[in-house]
Image 1 (tube, rainbow, N blue to C red):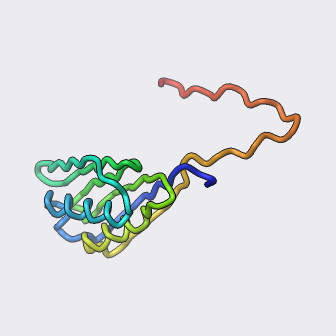
Image 2 (cartoon, rainbow, N blue to C red):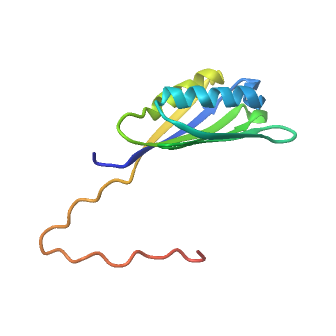
Image 3 (spheres, helix red, strand yellow):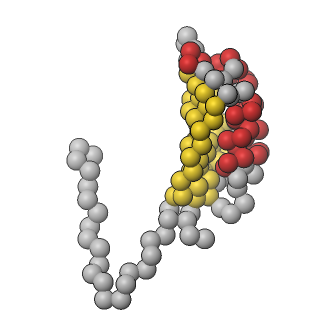
Amino acid sequence: MEHLGRHVIIELWGCSNAINDTEHVKTAMLDAVRAANATLLNIYVHTFSPQGVTGVAVLSESHLSIHTWPEHGYVAADVFTCGATTKPQAAAAVLAERFSARQTVVQELERGVFPPPPARGAAKPGRPRELAGV
């Protein structure tokens, strides 16, 4: 394995009003977790007033999160998984289908990419830079 995990960033546009229904969002999240072949540890879904839903599913393999803007028909979600048996792209497909998205943009990042071994005789890397204000 050349990396520790995969992080799928999901943008869904033109979604149905179901993105403002807490139970529908929760069910879609649970279906997405199953499709990703992940193990659910806990799930929390919150409804905002006057609209919008946010949910987080904590997984043995990491997490799935979702944030909805019903006034724009937009959903932002991400699925971060580790392990060779998970399928985070499958979760993205389920969310797009459950919310009837007219446009879907999915990006996948490899997380924890192992750096190549240093070349023989190469200088040791310096101390990582600290971020200002952190």
